[in-house]
Amino acid sequence: MKISHELLGEIVAHALEDPANEVCGVVAVSEAGTPEATRVLRATNVHASPMKFEIDPRELLELYSSIEDQGDALGAIYHSHVRSPPYPSQTDVNFAANWPGVEWIIVGLSAGAEPLVRSYLIEGGAIREVTIVGESRG
Image 1 (spheres, rainbow, N blue to C red):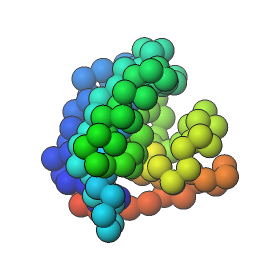
Image 2: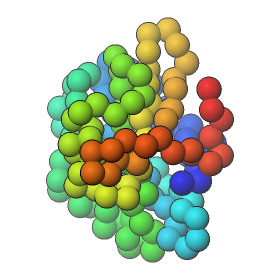
Image 3: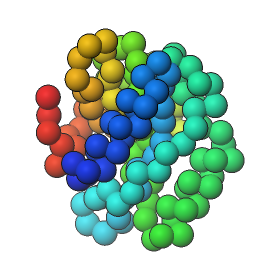
């Protein structure tokens, strides 16, 4: 997925607003050609937890409908890891089974370090890191 530094910055800023708990949201992409991020939509982590995130199914449906109403597609689900590196947990892998083809953007917030962003495709339990075009890799 291609994402601007500005939209990627929105995701990181969201994660930094609550560094004690995982935050989450979705990224809309244009459907023509190479997927390009068009919007970042924040969601509420119903658990308000440092260990896991979940978007209420009703909120997720509203976000999904909003994306489709604009003629876009769901390109990524994002969340933060407040105590671990930005690599999918087993919980993330299990949740991704319901969203084939959707990227998983994770913001790692290790204590005292700059936020680190990585993106993955998780299909059939297999995790593959993918480049976020336009991202500055740290």
